Length: 89
Image 1: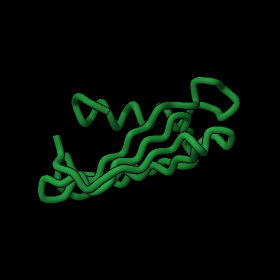
Image 2: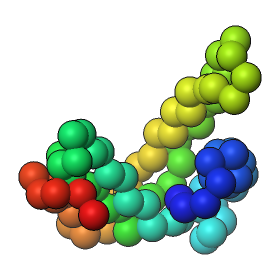
Image 3: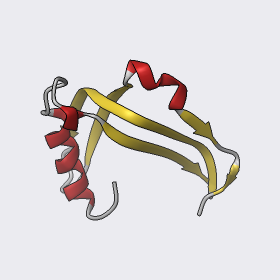
């Protein structure tokens, strides 16, 4: 999710509250793991939904850990892609 990181985590929290029965609970999700300028892994989930979302805030201002557990819609499992091993853009 692009933009202000505080806005992005707010969007995650709101998404986590959408009931699984609702069609808008499914979202396209791209997760990128970049290390030393290399795209180690890039995961794409075309129809993911939230299983769990946690926010843990530290003692310092503006720090926190946000954990999002997602799952891919069962009938779209074959559409998950995993890439990696190339320079990050």
